[in-house]
Image (cartoon, rainbow, N blue to C red; front, side):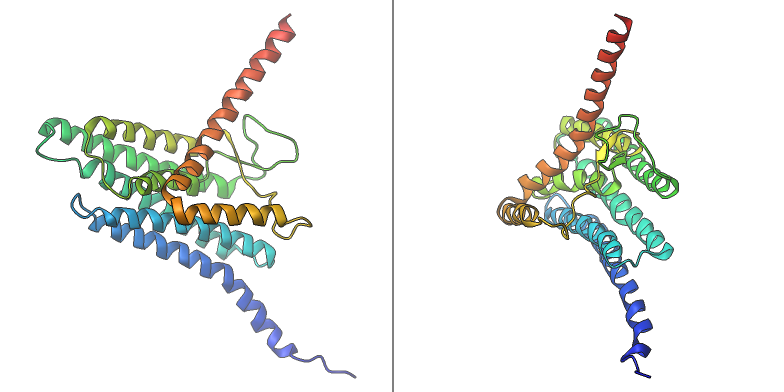
Length: 279
């Protein structure tokens, strides 16, 4: 009888593999908590805190993408990991960006150059918009957790996987990318604050919509031809090093607009089909 070496250590190694995705989820939570602390410390005179909060959320998006992918690659998905990931997303992509959007976009409006009543009303509607962003993100996560093979109202190409509604990390990415593009310098114009109000509301709506957003799940590093993907990642990495503000905002806004564009194109095609059927 031949003994199998290291059999006694196999269960412990297996348990260790389950911990690996949770470490990235813990990094997600840490980034979210750091973003909250930086947003609270930020001010009009020291707005670098806001920029650091935005960068922390951007790193959290990376952690969030890695924990699920690593869990699938190592076959270590678990109910505990999924629940922990959802709770982490509420903190990092719900509470943190909502707080950042409020303080950066509304709370820092100057006192002396804006009529006090107008400023007060802007802050009030800002609180409402940021709360709606948070609750929409939480509802998006709850719907995602209970949905079984969800299909968007405007389906795309067969065989391509889509999210139903904008994912909450993408919504948080829109908020943080705009803040980072401005290097953290808060809004000081009430009319721009109004634009910010509608943007925050629109992102919240996209998260609870049933529009399709590309999931990217068909991209696999372990595929037979990963060279093009690796080249693309290197190019994006270099661009992020030198022009992170512009690149992150372009990526975030392009992804946001892609859902709107897909919806408009599907509606146009549906109207065209209806006219042909009538004719």
